[in-house]
Amino acid sequence: MRHHTSTSRDRLGSVLERGTGHPGSAPPPKHSDRGGTTTLITDLPYGLRAAEVAREAVAVALHGTEADLLDDARLIGSELATNAFASGNPPLVLCVDVKTSAIDGLEVEITVTDGGCPDLAPASPPGPQEEAESGRGLVIVDALADAWSLSTGVHGTRAWCRLKRMASPSPHSTH
Image 1 (cartoon, helix red, strand yellow):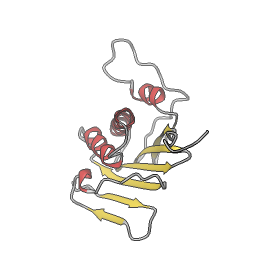
Image 2 (image 1 turned 90 degrees about the vertical axis):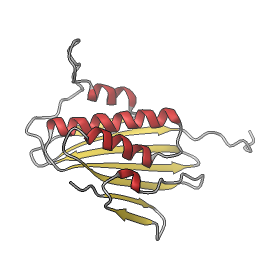
Image 3 (image 1 turned 180 degrees about the horizontal axis):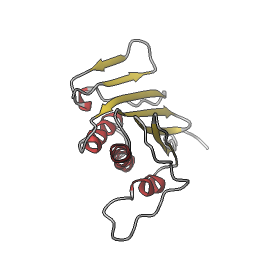
Image 4 (image 1 turned 135 degrees about the vertical axis):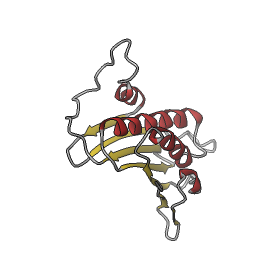
């Protein structure tokens, strides 16, 4: 299966699309003090590699950000992709939106969609059984994300979360 990755920035003439089968093929977005939005969209394989490909794509989208945010986002991307594969149907698609602002800081939205799920979405993340080897995905997302939601349906499922980091005060700012 061939994967399609698309990266776009909110400036004219800076859209790149490649179908090389690897999310790392898209150039890493550069985060500037001027602000802006970068979006990475990639197809995920419907299989055990979905989580790995999601982690790689999130790392590409967040290249150059702080390590703690990158670690949290990669884990969330992996968990959402795993849930989509385990509970949904193909196609699986990952979208990472990175918004930067000198005032508001950095906001990352991670969305994974799939082709649908016959089960209803839980009202809140269910707690895994103590000895269970799975079932912690949404609990992890809930613990790490500033906001999240899960919408399930027969024709499509969407899991979404937001991570925020406030802007650091400028070393030249006066108070």
